[in-house]
Length: 360
Ligand code: NAD
Ligand code: DAU
Image (cartoon, rainbow, N blue to C red; front, side, top):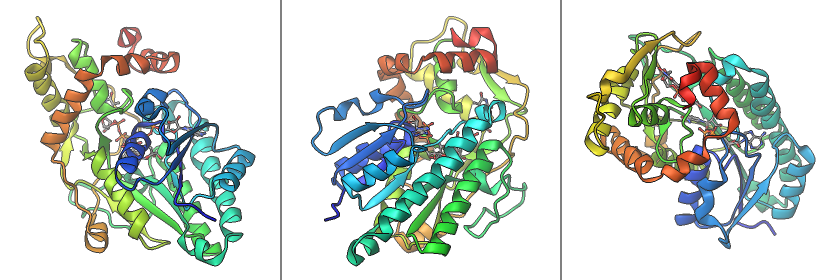
């Protein structure tokens, strides 16, 4: 008999870990987490679940078809929630091959193994099964200054190797629905921030650099617009889509409050001046340093999230001001967690991208 269990991939990363913690506190059914623990995957993110009766961790690769098949056979999940990915745009510009392997090949292996598992299920269980593919607003590419926010009908126009790999995965997910009726749901979300975000991304990188008085690198003119969504809101949207979404459908998930990068890092510096010990060198906003732009840097992202609001009743609950304050508090309270992110791959990346002093 199929259980209410869900199989999550990439649950030891930033959003996956927040999702599993929220899932076990709310929906409550068992979770199996398949994660390779790459440089961005961190077992400490889910340390609070050690010994939890409804949580099971499997250390493995989504590209291992035999492993995926055996997990589906053994656990008989009612849903596969797919987060696992190489997720950092700048890394994709330096090393695109890893993005092709994990984000495209890995997604295809999961879709194929899910199809084989699902097609052999009894009718009621087949009808209940869902494959939730977590995607990103980057698949739509950059939005013109006066353009209307992207709806789910926007064509794919990815700019970076990361975005291209996620667009390819979304295209395969769509093909599995249209060709075999595999009940795939795709979510397209804007920039997340919050606890457990790996400190290669703008908000945690800025937070840690500014905290310790290091330069805060801002690409280009710092006027690029991103729509920041607190991670708990993203996870709540994913639960709504999983429970009530229509198979084959795409759901945009955005906060609807775009901000320029310069405004984000300035707000973070000011919050740190308020919440952390002052620096002898003066206000932290003086640490902001304009550096060379990211190649192919998308100028603006903005999503029309009216479908998920209208059809599933989801709206973001956490304002940017509140979410940023909660994020700063969390990082200030978790210096031990920050230490666990300082692995050789990440330190090597910081030195390569920002210069030797950046990894200090
Ligand atoms: P992350 O980099 O923090 O975590 C990725 C996780 O996937 C890690 O735990 C890693 O160990 C795991 N992983 C990588 N390769 C794997 C493999 N081959 N097999 C098994 N596990 C593997 O990423 P994140 O920011 O939490 O993003 C999660 C998902 O959400 C990604 O699919 C990403 O594209 C998407 N997304 C992210 C954002 C954002 O702002 N962070 C926004 C929209 C969508
Ligand atoms: O939009 C959703 C996407 O958001 C996700 O799909 C990606 O997985 C996630 O990494 C994120 O991509 P971005 O490229 O938007 O996020 P990042 O934090 O890398 O950068 C945010 C903005 O800040 C972007 O305009 C680039 C800029 N930036 C980033 C870094 C790391 C800087 O100016 N300096 C930096 O050092």
